[in-house]
Image 1 (spheres, rainbow, N blue to C red):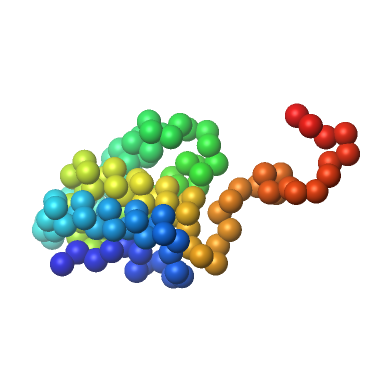
Image 2 (tube, rainbow, N blue to C red):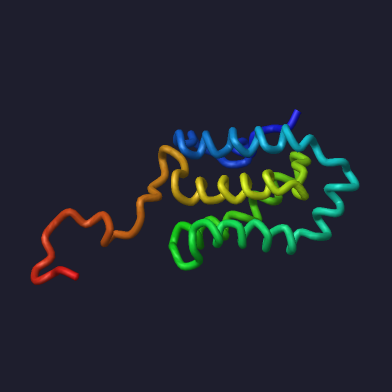
Length: 132
């Protein structure tokens, strides 16, 4: 049975991240586990898989947003975990769910992690003469 990739990260996931992990696991289970030969092929095509998932994230969420850039930074770790669990990375649903999972890591994260944005975005005080 394929495992949820959340086990590769420590901490208590938020509801959003837990949902993304479950959706990814469902997609991987539906696609069935990859064979050892498949996994070796994915290792050889790793760059192409990374680019395909990255492009999927960009097409849905844009290229220049902070969370998207952070999610793309998580992709290598997500792909490594997916390979260890023998996820079928040739399946489009698995690839899109893996991108969603990486985005959830960047935006929802874990209960003990702050993923809410910049200091400016969280500023609650006064800013003399400020305004945009």
